[in-house]
Image (cartoon, rainbow over all chains, first blue to last red; front, side, top):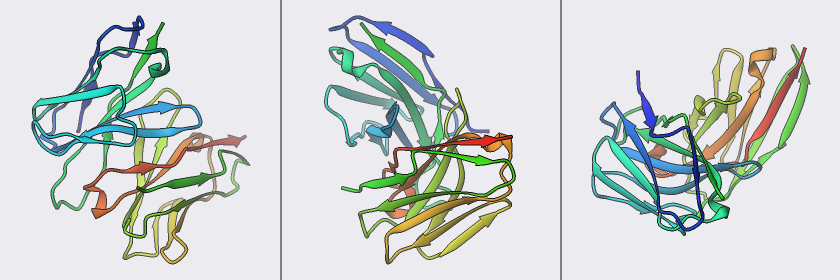
Length: 115
Length: 113
């Protein structure tokens, strides 16, 4: 059973703070993704990674960076948190390669509030 | 880039009736179309997907249809039950999901007992 975990369920930070959100998957998946979920806007991709130390921008990368030093771990970094980054952040992973299943497995989410 | 539009944003149906959610996509190179279900307070989970070489796929009470010419795909749920109440997201991707997914904005489905 695939398990994707995120470091915090709830997080409250102040404007200007540096924020780290961590995601770990235990199924040796190649692909990892960070989304933010806002009401009426669906799931929007921030960054994704196909391999260790590799990253690609998604649709809304501004204000964020990522790090993937190990295959199982993908971190999202808010360099200087702002109130418009208050949101639910979801991490996901998928196996990658040429396998028949391309399902993305999601973590439980981190609800971040920036005050 | 890809743009996925999803309608309606909310849908209420009587228990036992059918529900249909529709999505359109803009990138003609997209060839993989999954649907995710997110129950209240839980993480999204894949419920069904379809690839561009198939026009329709069924799994018990749910089915998905794809019209590549119109760049349109739909989720059909028959004999709806209370546990079908959730937010449903469609998505599109090139390269059978090995590239990024672009999600629609979601449909909140409520089943009225």
